[in-house]
Length: 193
Image (cartoon, rainbow, N blue to C red; front, top):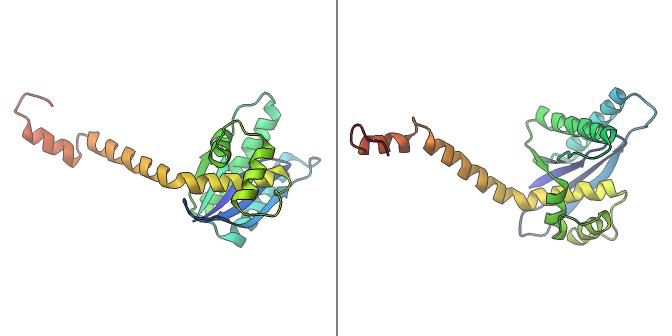
């Protein structure tokens, strides 16, 4: 599986591509940052992020795009910029028919370091170790993007099984489903199961 991880940000949007599967060695195929100048209008910055992410999608052809789920912070303007950059990443993926997975920062930290409260240095150190790199990717946004991709690769099999189980459960509880119709045929008239 090849995953493009996106650590959204309006000034620095981290991007990283990791290839591999759960239980197997992982390989980094690309890492970087899409930058935008702070002194131009937000709309123009979003266009630059879109072009940057589209370039990464063209160059690396990922199967999935994993984006950090935006969470509430005290600084509303930071959250807005992060959410806008996140939406651009999701839009770029959706245009190409690529699945998008959202992971919270604590999910990513827990998957990569074993602790949902790990700091940026710990995440960078583990990304370096897991991908067998000579040094941690810089800036931290780039390391975070790789961590998102790693998290998704490791969590994808379990998430897929969970989604399949949920879909089966929904199907079985629908009154028009084959299991529900079979149960209705077995139960005596006037009684419900």
